[in-house]
Amino acid sequence: MADDTIDVAVIGAGAAGLMGAIAAGRARPGAAVVAFDGARLLGAKILVAGGGRCNVTHDVVTEAAYAGSPRNAVRRVLGRFTVGRTVEFFHGLGVDLKREATGKLFPTTDRARDVLDALTAAARDAGVRLRHPWRVQSVRRSGRGFEVVSAPERGGTPEMVAARRVILATGGKSLPRSGSDGHGYEIARSLGHTVTRTFPGLVPLTLPRDHFLCALSGLAAPATLELRGPTGRRGVSFTDSTLCTHFGLSGPGVLDISRYWLDAPTGSTLAMNWLPGVSAEQLDAELAALGGESPARFLARRLPERLVRALCGHAAVEAGAPAHTLTRERRRGLARAMTDLVLPITGDRGYTYAEVTAGGVPLAELHLESMESRICPGLHVCGELCDVDGRIGGYNFQWAWASGHVAGVAAAEGTGC
Image 1 (tube, helix red, strand yellow):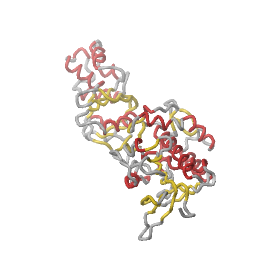
Image 2 (spheres, rainbow, N blue to C red; image 1 turned 30 degrees about the vertical axis):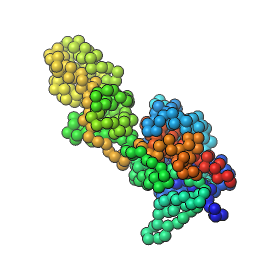
Image 3 (cartoon, helix red, strand yellow; image 1 turned 45 degrees about the horizontal axis):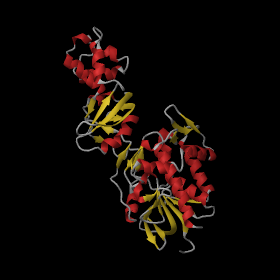
Image 4 (cartoon, one colour; image 1 turned 90 degrees about the vertical axis):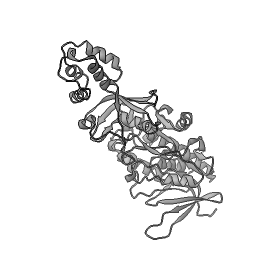
């Protein structure tokens, strides 16, 4: 190839791309590593993550926190760059992490900007050249390498860069205002890969606007959400804080179960238990034993009063009436509303509000020890572009760090420079 051919072209300079570029530069000092990104300002998703604090990772990360590709494949990649190595990596960049009660790890400064600045500085220290805004329009095979072609600006001519290896780290479709538009999937397809169905993950869910929970906007409480198949078979469930909003539901538990709901077969249902661990039968027995005490007074000791009254209204139960005046049917209806409330979900809030994209390039099409394509040698794929999505709490960042590191080291070593 020509003398001006770069060794590693990284397409996308988000979390996975920056990690891949740093790993490549460190693995082969002196190698020509260039990271291309279409954004004028890098790292938009890093800056907004964790409410601007950046939830870098989680204290315990296993394959059980992920969906998409087979979990044993996810485990093999995660094992090549563990949470411990992530903590050490950021410590080496001057970013120490702290563990919160939830297990989430944040920078001790609570500043996402510190994480991004440390990554971009580390990239430059590793000899990486950051080119942005430089939107990649296409990647083509050329001899034993690749031609990376830019999108023309305002009628101008595209620029072409030759590269020995390419790391595709464009991200998915989530948070499109950050620059994510799914173009990476088109590039992957053009190089021979398949892409599984993509849809929003970690996304709020919507209810009919006249649903009684929408009137409780701003109220949050712990709840268990459970997915049930068309036959009623119990599936995945999550217990965490649930937030009622004007459009429906949000909060960690809702975000975690959203991708499973959106991927569920027609006829599936989503049920909510506002008293995690308590069954309808248990609560019915407790209500039956109340005597003259009202259901509202009894339940308000365990749940917000606004929620209790709304649930009583939904079950057509007078909240302040003595419990012994309730008919068996009404009492059981209240118990079901509290512990087994079927939610008439109408949809989701889309990629604009999704924190991750579900679906992507299957791990079966990649060599897991290098993230190199089995279909297009010299191409490495990592991050959100892969068919891997994790729970809320730093898991998707950990996938980005791990898969990016594996891809970067392997890409650099594959250049033979």
